[in-house]
Image (cartoon, rainbow, N blue to C red; front, side, top):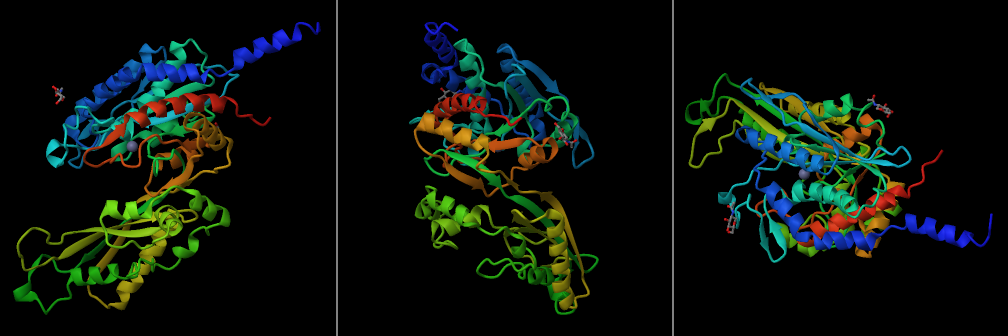
Length: 493
Ligand SMILES: *[C@@H]1O[C@H](CO)[C@@H](O)[C@H](O)[C@H]1NC(C)=O
Ligand SMILES: *[C@@H]1O[C@H](CO)[C@@H](O)[C@H](O)[C@H]1NC(C)=O
Ligand SMILES: [Zn+2]
């Protein structure tokens, strides 16, 4: 080789590979208003998946997503995932799932971005300060239903791809999208679709990215775990029909008394779970984990004031966060069949059904939890020697999800956050359940990361949901940077 040309060759090669982040970020800044308008356009569609009367809107929403991706030159499919059965037996078409592909270079990694464009219900009368379907900018916060959960993050991903295209830069990785419209009601039909496409859509996917959660503070975060949920019905049945307490009271053992009695044995007054075996199954907190919790930016007083309670169960950050994310809880939600209207009614309900759930964590297992809870409640009930009948059923058994924070996917995430925000991210978990993460993991076997861009105070599912322009726009830059970092991941041969 002619040594004189070597530096030139190296220069050329380096130049071609250099990641022009500054230009891409500038593009996003220059197109901020356009991106806000795109969000306005999506928020205006009342894609409430829980309201069957809004189903046409949901179909329109999926069409809109597909159209946007098509206009960008993606290979787009609207995947029919069948129908759902309504309580009255009627069948209703589910919204199509949108899949799209940008690039199919076998020499590059392939990521699949998952997101959803359906929303929780919202009405102005619920206590919104603005029309929930008319995006409103108040001091840099963009208010509207579905802004943070999950329309802005989905758009941010799309705009990240668009920025590369607009500047005629090659995408550093192949990007696939999987956008659904039933997340808020339990992702009906999606598990089957993922299973059906395991050897087609997912065959060349290396990594799955979910951006459907939020930061914990003003510091960017990467999420590496979610709790699962086991939801129970405990039904106590007594007389054939409801009884008058004046006429029959004192002559029958009341189902409600039995039910309250057994519910009271689930947890101690200080919140300790009393069901045998549950606490023993929880993975112990390691020193490393303790240290990670120590480093997280979190204000206990602010948390306390936000929820408006006089006292929390734990006053130090580590215990509080650990109990929010990595320990199980029992919550009692309600009693069906109980009298709950205003006024006084002197009824003895004949049948009452308690609803409670256990947020579960590694290494708990739903099937085991089901047995532990059923056996325990039946034994407690047996001690009461009641003539009534107790039936315990588990109606939801969603597993927890946990990722390895040392995985290259997370290291790449940390590097992208460093580039865009110039800081280290908080490594956090979600106390809630995102069952789809576990499905992706179990079915496809691919590595998954949750990279949120929502703010800690966005009010997802609540009144006055918003996302800040800052999170939306800087979040788009984060996704741009992240695609480049993923491209650097070395695959072992
Ligand atoms: C949205 O709100 C703005 C400001 O209140 C108003 O001018 C506009 O007409 C509204 N748009 C729709 C579609 O309701
Ligand atoms: C899905 O495909 C992957 C290979 O890409 C395989 O390892 C996995 O076992 C498949 N899952 C199911 C449920 O068949
Ligand atoms: Zn969501």
